Length: 150
Image (cartoon, rainbow, N blue to C red; front, side, top):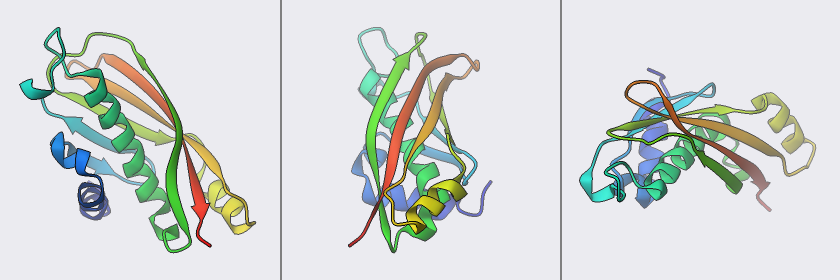
């Protein structure tokens, strides 16, 4: 487990009510990857008994937010992380608990260098959603920005 796990998990749970609503569980949160789990909860099932697409979207978006906080938390005094756009592909039927694993699509140092140069950097975060047997049930690509504070 990463040393940043409690602070990132607590920060997301405190600032994003949907994280608490869905009872998302933080398994790992580091600048290299973030792993969150959506427990199997009947209140969030769809018409075929698996997790609702909206719940899986929120899980994946939350995993992307966790890695953004872990990778760029030291920049929060001068920039606000914001999601710009997202695309999700539902690949297979999900049943039971699902896990989202997020990775940065660009080196963090490149993003910070753009911020240092006075730019508003954008960077992708890639997320794989898997079920307990390891099968990928969905994939999300979400583009984030660090908006400089004025």
